[in-house]
Image 1: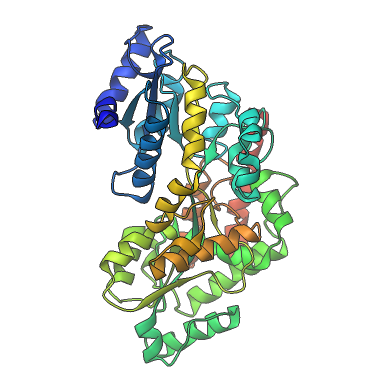
Image 2: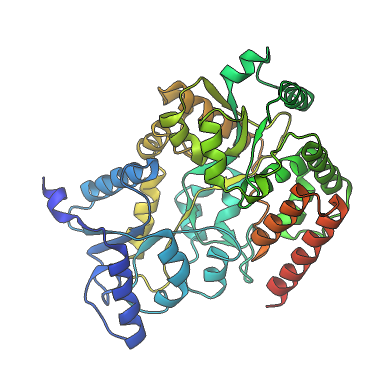
Length: 439
């Protein structure tokens, strides 16, 4: 078809980006894409999703729709990698040969930094005129907005999210059945299930202390005891945060209690997220607390009956929007970029996300045919309905991820008390916050 001939796809992301960086360094022009000095008949899109992923399938359909409605526009889709764009964005966006719209990570140290440096375009007027402010739930909009310092949650829109992610609990139902357990619906039932497995000689929680999983379990516990005001203070700097307050203390002491009880394997401080996932898939552990990003792999690889649910009794959960569509300030086809972004939020595109397990932010779970995918999407919709996204524990300040990993490894190894762990977190948090606000 004509639209197939019109579209140009560049799969060699490293080569494409290397060329852009070289041209930026020497101030040259390439004469191609969206940054060719004013060719508004070309729309250049950069993203880093695999073609067979939920997002890749959805973006491909959005491109098709765009081409059908804009037959005189050439669409150039260039597949980069997350690392390439993350590492080099500040360099290539200062040049003239830039994409018209690209996928980028959300947060203070990423999209916020580009916004504060004037490298991406404010989208508030488009968000209002195109109805994005009405379409997207409030907690999803938070990741789209950044103030003059690049802090997330207020100011202008600088990006548009159109899918989501969250942390929940995966259960090996076969192992629950052997112990005569049903899926826990309360925190007390969850703890009782942990105790039952341990009494049967089974370590209940698949965990990993060398990467993000243990921090997310800790944050689930913080959210069990916290309220929205504390989350906003912690994530958005609305107030000062006391890491020795009741919520942080109760959560860290509870995790310490679980470690002492043997609910977490003693060697988990050295395990990676991959180790954790494989051990759950293999049936070594009956419960895994982790993100929706595992869903597709679990669906393909798990040989037993399993289910996914929200952390019992929590009203807030780790999670966020997915990555953002942003428009570089030096893009030359901005109106076309806005139109493409708008298409990604249409029901037809959002339904593709939903059917493939991509957690649409403007979709309808009733249209999803696969029961497990529908279950997960309904869980996400219930979080959005309660404004329950609490983002991730490492988000507030740069470098906090490594601190959380290190401190919680000390808790697993029992080399620090809960209070000492909280002191370590507080010190790094306050230093990072000062750098952000005064930098």
